[in-house]
Image (cartoon, helix red, strand yellow):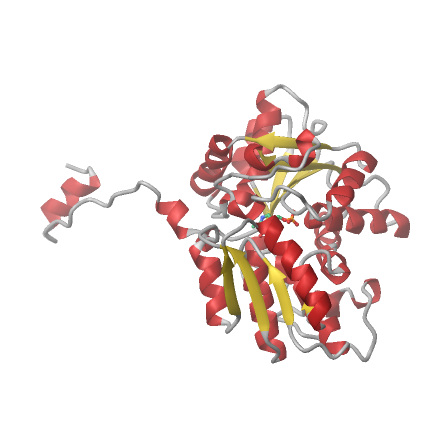
Length: 352
Ligand SMILES: *Cc1c(COP(=O)(O)O)cnc(C)c1O
């Protein structure tokens, strides 16, 4: 399947002269979630848009293909980003593909192992700093500007443009818009982009009513919920550990215009949703992704109607679970090895 630029060329700011730097991102599966659907009852259908199956394992690739293609068109000397991990993994891969240097500035010790491995393996210049993501972002904005290096964080407008294609794919597949769309919110680029995609489809007339957008932040990093910058954001969901979202206004616009909501979910609720997805639905996403399902479960438990009976609900699972293997095995101790005779094996299996 071609990448998002080829598939949605007439909806994106590209011309015949734009070099297409693609790893065939997008076209991710919209997986039915029967256990969640059964929980909500009355024929409601929950689908998981599994963005963890993009080339570098997160939705960031949709925006990065466009940001790096436009950077190459403009003759850039390299790309730079601040990152909680997935932006750097994606930037590193697309920069490698384009043959330009990539610098990534990361909060030291706060990036999941898989994401760091990706930045390293793709040859990015990795610079850990003794500060959080929000400070890292301020610094790379300054240096990109001063040095003429292209910034590929989501304040790069091409990132948002590329990421809006997720809404096109969902409408393509469902034949219409869902009633409600849940997604995790960190820097708020993705909720802004997804809403733009739905809004454009309303303008083209392909849908009449766009979904209610429900953004989910981690309780320890919930500036949009509380209405105030969080100086020291904390959460186990490192990809949304952001205290001053760059696309704050975009998120507010999406929530207001769609009659949606912004919720805070506790880390325990995020982990419960993460467990639910992996053990009941068979889908392994990273903790930040599970925040949106935590939001869905929280609303359901509070007796809030998530969507009318028979309606469709989409949750964006933003990144792959293998990004953060330490979280996945946290506290799990494997049993001591046993002899390989069948009796011992039967006992270990609980069969005798
Ligand atoms: C980047 C990211 C988010 C947050 O997206 P924003 O656009 O910053 O709100 C959520 N989950 C994962 C896995 C991410 O990589």
